[in-house]
Length: 422
Image (cartoon, rainbow, N blue to C red; front, side, top):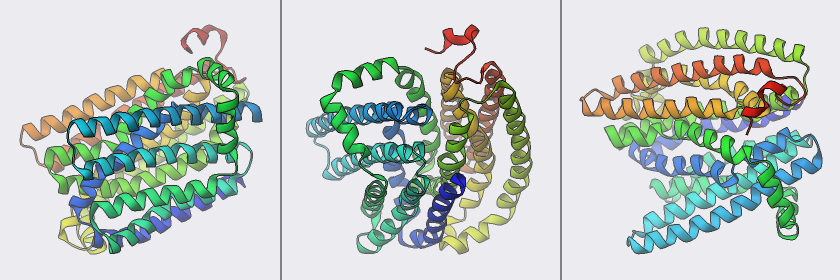
């Protein structure tokens, strides 16, 4: 029932985004999307940093009070870091005599990131309290609402400004729906019981020291391809990658905010025998997903160019087929890792994820830069990049499956492994 509520809202938002995307590609150019990918990447990477990973603790907390403490800590750190970044950004822009467009983009990225943290806290609180319907509605608006606003602003204003304003308005609308007073209570707690919040932040230092770095590395992997391909091969190529990410990131978001989130809640406290069964089911799911992704990728590569041109409004979008084909195996590997990511959060071993993701960042960036310097085509570069990332994610998945054998089923690591938790 809970999965159905969350899935209904998120799938509905995804469906609206899919319907509107062919309209967006007729309003905006690949270069527009390529330029906007820098803003989207900033928001995707910055939001988890502002909250220092504490919103994830809301789902692991076993009591309402514990969840509220994580919420207060997340919002307090987000407010403090947002204020510092705002002042530092404005000073840097003044010293460098930056153009007003840059300042506007910086402010929008910071505001959108702050709203994303607040929305995440509100949605996680709703899920922890069993209010999945409200969480699903907020997610629907967050996904579909941004596309609606971007379409409207595209007609009224156009260009990168329309995409930025649509992003901002969509996130604000989602927060307005998700907020049920939790943020007000959390901020009040930060002001009246700041010492308690600070003690909680220090006690749960695992989240800023391990969860946040690994989440940051992962978000770089999600959002970096479009900007880096735009830098190496031109804004048009970056726009193609950004468009594909617009599609493929949403199913992952749906799975993460519905199935993986509920998996997180249900895995906590399971017995050792039950967790062993769950691990076997995850391996079976990985085999099915892998077997499905290979032929799907081949179909996109061989038959997708003409379809992409028709759907998105011209030959300039035909390269979407190659990008999609290359990203299918990456997304398949990322999907199965959504569940092992939750296991890492529960068993306190995000250090494993951080190591693998840092390696993925290094090898991915190196491949793109080397491909550009050697004069490879962007198509060859995208396939080389996809192969490296898929390999790393699969290796991470099976490493976590092995590491989770030490999970005792009581919410902690077995005694012999507690030294590695902090």
